[in-house]
Length: 267
Length: 101
Image (cartoon, rainbow over all chains, first blue to last red; front, side, top):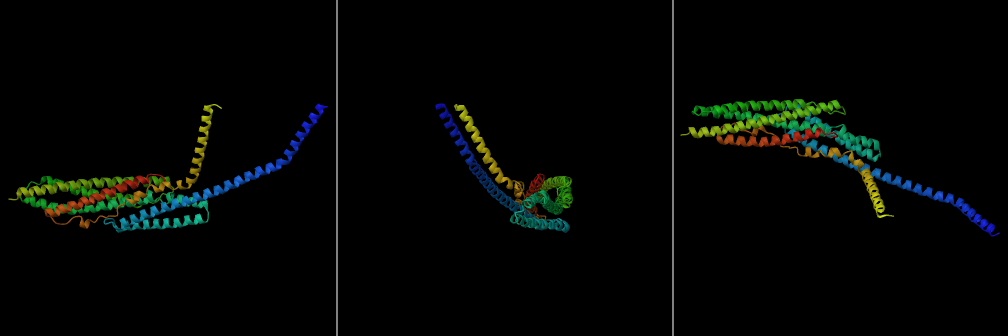
């Protein structure tokens, strides 16, 4: 009897639990489901916020990149306009290339702003990447300009050396007429003239090698050719610089010899 | 629970937290990473000298000692300018060899 009561009570309790559980299960499921949905919505909202923040940062960085490039191009334009020895054609070519790049960068900046306002993510990324991939301002335009600027100065100094050479020749002849031994100065003057002429040649080679280079637009072969040409031109400029340093030393030697000869021949 | 097990659990928790923070920061910075390469070269162009060579005034046509001394001084100044120009060439050509420019 007691066993029967216990068994039936236990069965009732278990049945009750089962019924309660069955009734409560949908509610539990709904709660869990809505919690999950809420979590997903929160995550989606957070992701959207993160994406927007990321895009804003991308646009900010792109603006900085473009501003840096335009600033560098303007500085280069100023330098090109002040060049003395490059031909009008060379200066004009460089200048128009620089102006074209500035206009392109300005247009690209507007396009990026439009991409952002249109929420066009794929176009935004493509346009931002094109700052470095398509236009090659730091990779080509600026090196071209710096090489042209250095070459222009080399030519100007070499030209000045040639003018100075004429004055030194006059003084050497006067000193020789006064009885001074000037053979070392004559040799130094010949070397000065040779070095000045070679510096001009090297500078012209550097300009010729780089003036017609064009952006690679993604072509590896063109990029490698451009890089090789720029490096060769840099070597030319370095050689020209050494030539002019040697020519200057020749001039120093000659001036010192002239002063010494003047003292020795003055009664 | 032994002490060593507790230490291991704490290490795992710290690693997970650091990993989450790193992931979050990487996600936020990803947009900026596209453009980071271009920024490094701005100094190259910024150092570009705008002083031009003017050979008409570098040297005179005079032959006196003072004329020659002045000519040498002017040439030295231009040589210094050339050193700056040459350094700009070195920097810009070196920069051009880097990808993403």
